[in-house]
Amino acid sequence: MKRLTYLLILIFFLPETQLPAQENINPNITQLVEQQEKSFQKIEKKLAGLAYDSLQMKKLIELSKKNKYLQGEIFAYNMLGKTYRIKANYPKALEYHNKALKLSKEINDINFTLYSLNMIGVVYRRMDAVKSALEYHNKALQIARDYPHKNNEILENMAISHNSIGNIYLLLQKEELAYKHFTKALEIEKKFNNKLGLAINYQNIGSILKKQGKINEALEYFKKSLSYNEQIGSKLGKIICNNSIGNIYLKQNQPNKALAIMEPNIKIAQKLGDEYYISDVYINLAKVYLKLGQNDKAGELLNRALKIAINKKIPSQTAVAYQQLSLLYEKEKNFNKSLDYYKKYNEEQNKILNEKNRQLVADVIIKQIELENKEKIKELGEENKLVKKKLVRTKLTFSSLLLLSMLLLFSAIIYYKQRQLNNQRKLINMEQSMLRARMNPHFIFNSLNSIKMFIIQNKPKDAVSYLSTFAKLIRSILQSSIEKESSLKEEIETIKMYVTIENTRFSNQINFQINVSDELDLEKIKIPPLLTQPFIENALWHGLSPKKGEKKLTINIYPKNNKYLVIEIIDNGIGRKRAMEIKKSRTFKRKSIGIDLSKERLKHFSKNFSNQYNIEFIDLYDEQNQPAGTKVVIEIPMK
Image 1: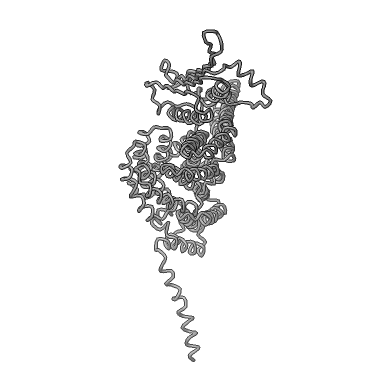
Image 2: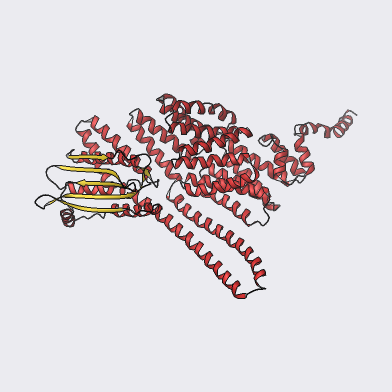
């Protein structure tokens, strides 16, 4: 009897024992599943404030499965993916986003498909997996472009794709391509007055302006972005903007102002729990402390950032942390540690900007051109149908001429794009050739030999001084290899370091002098990086090295007619004719490509100016008409 009573209690009351689990579900979720809402934006609005609640999203998945509500299930998978992305758990984030993508394709929902593709791309971008990120964002963009009827959600996803592609190009230091995509994203966001989208794209365009040296314009864009972030209450957006504005203040040599705006970011980032941005905040604040001379605080923050970046596998953050630690130890005159960290920085940077990624950029540009041409052909094709209907009633010949003109236009567009692509590939090859030419194995070996001799001769101060100059020069060469232009100030500093190192090998016999006109703004004038090094190397090793007696090397830098920057390299060596005779008599002849490479780089640089560059070699003679050296005159167009 007791057993029967127990069984009856179980039968009648077991369903009620399951109800408490349902009570934990937010009523908005229950209502959403009942209504079976299909629109992503409406679901997002309905569940505002719950999207990043992992427990509620898992309950939404469970309830959606029971009620065969696939849109709710897809939404929850994507929100869980974003939550894990914030925690820098990228494998888990990809797992959930891929589940969402699979279901989106099954129900053939374009809005959820585009969103899922973009979210996967964002995760890969956080991982610095450039190729995968570009593939997913470009796929989303292509699907959206091919779709005939674009609703607001499709346009919003197109803006996300453009924004992320822009960020990837920014990572690959292709600012022009990045600017193009950010501008397209901004145009879409303006149509809908999407304040989050506007905040993101004003911030991104500001970053490009900063890289271009347009500091004041960049600051205005960052402030616009901050204003929108404050309106929508985005704490993450405020962190990003405060870091950017603080870095502008650092460039303006206002470290205390930078500290005031950046220091509160630590608490905000820690509260958000986004490991990526916690690491980023530590690094940016460390830069401020370095500027203020508070090296201990800077070191502590950089080591925290490095630990997070390594644990969470974030190569870009790892590289920057190594770079700043190198600068920290250089300030403390611990040159061995500084060099070690710089090597680590360079290794990490190469993982991001390696040959594979450089080639990838070229491939992606081809795909982008093809995509844009398809879109243009499609649009023009539709216009052509309407035109043909009207022109059939008139003259057939006129229709034929119009079609022919359009075909010629298509051909011209494709030809122009292909020429652009060939030029970009050529520039990439030139950058690689430049780096190989500057990182001459003989120069590096001889420099290291000089350090060794100082150590053998028990001259530690000379060894440390030489090593410091050598490390700075190598850093300058490596940095220049990934930049299209450098300031005249940077070029002059590099020249001085290079001549100092080479002069040591000449036992400091060379009387070196550099004269720079006061009329020149050294920071604003831009030239191709390391342009003068091959000419100076020629002067040292072919002109002055074989000469006996007094050795002079003079460099004059001045403006000409406000149109040209003139650089004169003058040596009192043996002259070009005698140098050529000596070179021919050598058994081992090393082919020098430095000067030809400099000419080619000047040719590309001059395309942006109405004036062309000019290089002139002048043989110098003494009163007895004997060779007395060589003068090289380089005229570079300038604004």
